[in-house]
Length: 515
Image (cartoon, rainbow, N blue to C red; front, side, top):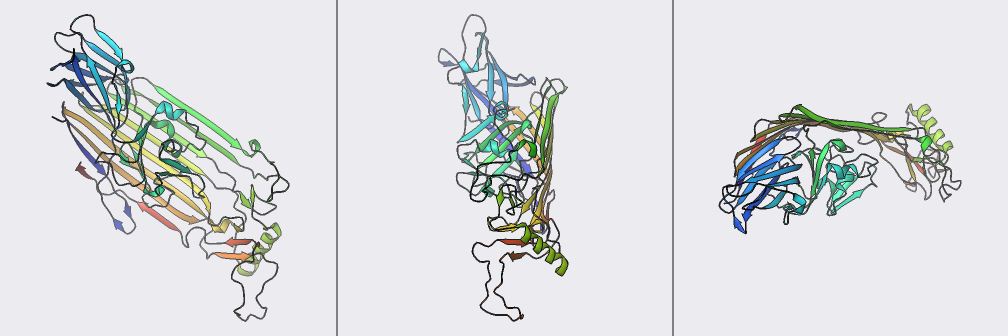
């Protein structure tokens, strides 16, 4: 008889400006399973008592082997270490230690009992045939492995990019993005503790609701990526799915902290000369970049109630590379001169009363992320967790970029994201073969595009020294509509969309369904 596991998933769907839309969630696994067979001299041992203990929290799951010697402990916390103790009448007690489980996977554990002698204790790595079994191609990284990844940006995409099917694209001006198996990055799905935490409106480069991901890297216990899962519960994506399982508190206090700093004083100002920069000197505007955060976890009530809190703040405003030949941060627009910019700005202000702004100096990168989690062992068979998420970020983006076009401040827009979410996860084991898991999500998400210098039409000013239009004001048919080849353009106004756009995703009705 196969083990029966009922899964209940609940999710609040996005409510846009046009009206409310409610949909059931496509859920990810958040737990692990230990499944084993108990034998003696090749024969199954029925009726053996199996005790599975999560050592860091003291959480215990009990099972009894069936007629074939099989047992299953489902709905377990991911990670470990676990200890499995097998007791059967007429046999010596056998204990397997240091079992490490992976999210969404089953740890296969064969146990051999001896009929006489002292109790046997062995580590899982020495048991032949023991190990995690994945249902489909998956890549799972533990907290220790994540801590060893070099991520200058503290971006969760650096973790997802470790998947063999993933490609990290850093060429987009709107931000970094990850593509799985060659699919459009917006077709990905991102989940936290099994529920979707994604970009509700499709304004970001990929499925993430913020620039670097909604949770600090130090808060992640395991990170899973998949492209073709077999599980019927996993859907609603065409590229890949990333699932971040947050850390939980244990019976011991743990904590981490970090601080990084950079500035123009630590950045080189000279390179080898090249066509666009014959002097090799780079003008670095003044800037500072700071990134700091901390994570702490531990017990509130030993063996019963645990907490984890993590926060991270980024103030990493970086210079925008594009500028005139005389004033740039690494990428001069060919032919663009300070004198032309000054003249265009003066005419716009004096004749039309319009301020086009100057060169966009900084991307204004800001990012705040906070997560808190409470785990409670209600009993040996009941466990519940409450998770709260908060993220807020902002970036200045130039609408026009290129080696022949220089977009001014009025041609740029501010791109903010703000998200609040609450997750409830309840796990229960009713019998050895029947367990349930229920989740609920509450989420609000605000995003938009706001011109840096107010609403206006977009104008392209050609910097050609002479015009082919006549001076009498008559409209002719033999005039150019584009700049001559090799002549730069200065682009004013229409930062982002033609008008400010703000989109809000409000909490909707929660639905659940079995799968």
